[in-house]
Each structure stands twice: as C-alpha cells, then as structure tokens.
Image (cartoon, rainbow, N blue to C red):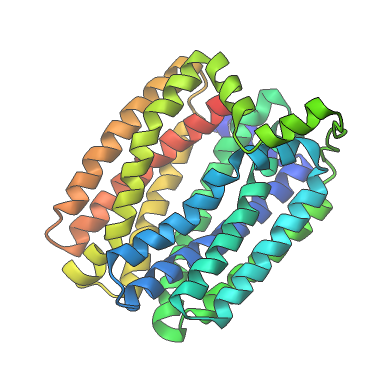
Length: 340
C-alpha cells in the first residue's frame, strides 16, 4: 500500500498530469449531474421508457457515427485547438439545456453535446502516455479512474438534490461551467500533439472518405489478438448495460418509490464503491492478470445487476449498486490500461 501511494505521488508530480486529473474530475462531476437531471427530466415528461431509450440513443449515436472521423481528426488536428473547440461546443450545448425543457429540444442539444464529446475525448486519451511516459501510464489511468469514481457520485448526488429542490436548469448551467474549466485546462497544458500534415493527393482524399469508418482503429485492434477478442466480447455486455440504464429510473422511481434525491443516492453508492475498485485495479500490474480480472469483474457485474432487478426494497437496490460500481471500476481500469 505504501509503495502504491508513493507511485501515485510520482504521477502527481507532473504538472500536466495534475491539470488533466483535476479538470477531468470537475468536468465529470458536471456530466454526472447533467445525466441524472436528463434522465429525471425525460422520466417526468411521461413519455415512458421509449423516451429514455431515445435519450440514451442521443448519447451513443454521435460517438458511433463519428468514431472514424473523430479518430482521424485527433491525429490530424492540433490537440489544443481540437480540445478547446470541443469544450466550447459542449459548454454551449449544456447552456442550451438549461434554457429549454421541450423533449425534442433536449434531444437535439444532447446530440450536439455528444458530437463535440466524440471529437474531444480521443485526444484526452492519446495525451496520457505523453504526460507521464509509458512506465507510469498505468498508474495515471488508475488514479484518473479513482478521481472520476469520486467525482461521478458526488455530481450525481448533487444533481438529484438540485433537481428535487431547484429544478434541472441550475444543473445544466453548472455543467456548462465545468466544460469551460476543461477548455481552460486544454489551454494550460504544455503537452500537445501538433497533428500530421494533411495529404491532399487523390489517395489522401480517398483516405479521408474512408475515415467515416474506423478502419485504421479496427486494423490496430486486430493486430493485438487479446484486445480484439476483448472488444468483441464486450460489445454485447455494453448493449445489455445500456438497456438496464433505460429501465433503472423506472425501477427506482416507480417500483421502489424513491424520489429524485434517492435516485441520485444510488449513483453515489455505486461511485463510492467504484473508488475502492479503482484502488484494487491500481495494484494489478501484469497483462494476463488484467485480462482475468476483466472476465471476473464482468461476470460479477452481471450477477449483481440481476440482484438489483430482484431487489425487494431500495436498500437492497443500493447493495446491488455498490457491487456493480466496485466491479465495473476494476474492469474499466484494466480495459483502459490494456488499450493504452
């Protein structure tokens, strides 16, 4: 344990690492507040599970559609410019959410927000090894996951309380501020990727057209057999988890009779357990051990979610949420460590 804290202090000694960690945690807290507020807004609209499903599609679709183009943009465009532009667009979309309450306007704003996220997020990921080097990147990711695990539940809990007491407008305004913090962080970073010179030849233009599909990323994954199998195996799991997210608010609010603040409390419990999981993941150093940890974490998470669905009362639901948060944190940290 002492050695682990010493290595984490070594990571925090890098100025850019501190900026990335703090700004990312604050932004995630804002995102967690906004996500709780959005789900509660759609639930309160009375449009039913299909509306919540539509909201989650608005979150996922821009990331899927633009993943090839966003990956190429992260390679071609100066990282600082791309991060600043992405953060500003996200701030504007969050501000729009604070001013509207119509369901379709909400969906449109989320689409804009997630499109900007799709272009900015890969850049933050590619900067991690440049900040601390390959030797410490695993520790940096584990520390990042730990801070995100703390920021997520704090934001979710605050979001539920604010929605119950003040409405959701203030939540989206605070989320917009968190994106501005991210913009300032991008401008303050010393580490940056200058981007590659664009290829204007006919072959280069054809490559740009092919960038609508993530062919380069797929080729890179297929060259790493373990990662390729892992990604394929994770796809049905991710789809299942997202389908659970659609009905979760109805289970908590309608079946178990919990209020908005208690819905946020469920996220707090899951995130708090994830902090413990991130500490456990930080102690896993070998690739084969990480692969085995991912398998067991996903298996345990599935069993815990079955328990949540069968929960006879809200406290039992919270117990399942704690198990899910703990196991997902281990799985996520190990997956990111393998990918990076």
